[in-house]
Amino acid sequence: MNVILDAREEVESELKVFTENRVKFSLRRLFWMVRKIKIQYSAVLSSRTTCNQNCMISLETFDHHQIEVSMTARDQRMALEMCLKKIYKLVQKAFRKSQKYGRFSKHVYI
Image (cartoon, rainbow, N blue to C red; front, side, top):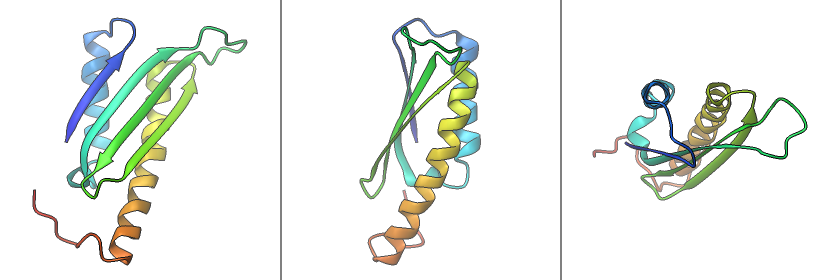
């Protein structure tokens, strides 16, 4: 699994390490299914509320499903957590659908 971190501003090294560890931990059961994951942080400028940090995650599975999720929260860590929770559910759904239609076997060797 390739984790690509993209941001418009300079990202702190602590946030980079946290992001990589959190992604690997939250997708630990389905990491073999994910080929590439791209995480992009940005700030929402015209926000009237305190939720002004945006996190967008796009990933590609081994059976070429593209999944994208975007969330806005108070800080980048919370936005990442919310995105990863949603991504996990969507990857599980894609896995079940692929198994149902026979496009994906139970045992995939990388």
